[in-house]
Image (cartoon, rainbow, N blue to C red):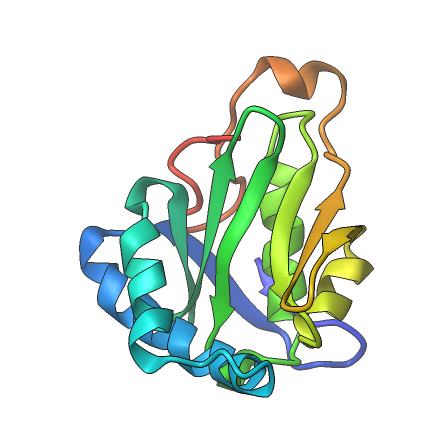
Length: 178
């Protein structure tokens, strides 16, 4: 899959199943990318930011985003009875603003064959909110720290009756868990 919008550099990315050994570097990535927003909100704790990820890490629901053969981020897709939650969506800072996040989000949402809405949590004031709004997410609820956003499923018709892996080259999802 190629990423890049509005004249940004196009790069190829792939998604591979995460492994338990990915937990430590994803926790570190989470701490790096969330630090500015958490500090702005007066909520940054270097131990807690990593611990919260490690306590909830589910490798079988998490994909590692790779660009040019190197790990560039992660995304978790967690089905719940009322929604499909997108969680732990982190990109290395070097990839911010290049269209990679939008490309990954589009691919993950398009691959989900479920009619439940998508939901996610974003911190108040985070630049990521604009990315989510561009992809159909709207505010469902908010408090002084968190914003819960939701978007309609893209699944229609017969897509609901079959499970399919991501199409295209390289690893992709091992099965559609949505």
